[in-house]
Length: 228
Image 1 (spheres, helix red, strand yellow):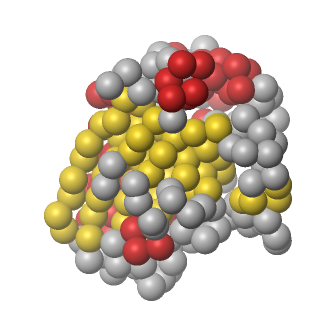
Image 2 (image 1 turned 90 degrees about the horizontal axis):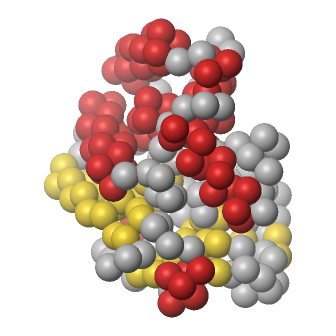
């Protein structure tokens, strides 16, 4: 599975990178004891490590916020997903219980503050491409009642037939992980100021968490840079 960058993206948005991870033969459940123990451990870790007052000066948070402003998105209203999930935990709340696999990679995002998408690999039509949307291109994000028309120039991750994500904060409903999912692709989204090693670490942690709570095998981790 490859990820390609459109030439316009390469020219206009330098220093982008994503890390792709693959894990097969997972068994997705609503929840289980292993997941609950993992949640408790990560909640305790990040509540000890971070505070809401200090987040805005965190280098990782700052890099994503700066990139959002560059895209014309206000990061104080539409927060980068890693920051939004972490803030939820720091405020004393918990993750919504979606499924073992989804909750597992969300925990990795909380731990690393790196936005991560989880996709059902069997619903994809590769190769994947990072490009700008065409005016009116349809996208239905998770939780949306119906598709919306994207504005021309919106940065997206897409395959040959559909938009998979508004880069790097809203995933498609059509390719989300469900109880029937057996093969999972994870995408960690990089922006200027985020090292490739950070993306790899985030994906490797997410894969290990999924294995802990949902099983699986045959992980593959690979970074794709707009500079290559």
